[in-house]
Length: 310
Ligand SMILES: Cc1ncc(COP(=O)(O)O)c(C=O)c1O
Image (cartoon, rainbow, N blue to C red; front, top):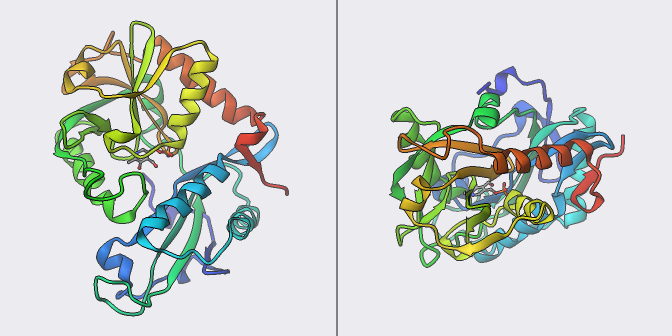
């Protein structure tokens, strides 16, 4: 993955101002750096046939504010202000197709675990970012392993909040997989059922029906998950989106795929060295993947796109 030094973006929106990329810095005693007390979003904008547009921006913003709630993070900017900041950033940097990272976190003031009077700082950055798991993965699928790390339970942390600190679990699972020669991990929940990937939701196809773990399985309620469920139903599929999936069912699936704002729709061709279906991208995955990419290329479903006026 290319580093930021190779990227041609000059500005980051930070607490109400556009600052130079290299000056977008925080103090080392920032609360969130020590305790993971931030919430964030990962969003994509696409250069659609109807012009540059942020995909499902309103839903991402809504999740950002909802993630902030359990932590009492008081985001002082309104959704309209964050929208204006983001669209202005994309315009300034001439970014049509890019990844957008809004983050709100406890900042610099004191360093008890209690954030006390620490401010809630808010930043929005954007940069070009290609296929998360690689271009080749979109066509041929990825090889994954079931991680030995379990996902945190929703009785331990709010798993429906996209909290920075929780991503050490994702990092451990993903790095374990890569050390073992796989591209990505699948993480089981505390009960031992399938939860999701480190940064993706998971779908299973069997006998022409589609299954995905329910929201109570310690998953993040993915916005791409919702998009794919909607598209699949429109394509006539039965989608079971409130089920438990056992580890063994992964191996006997006809098809498996990941969804996520970063990963988009990525087929899974092997789990723990066991081929899934024919060991290539399956037909249902391909159909839904095409539906997804056609959608974001066309940019025609207005309620799902926030267009950037030039
Ligand atoms: C743990 C986890 N699950 C699922 C997803 C997919 O969510 P979305 O489709 O909203 O990007 C993500 C990515 O944000 C994630 O980090």
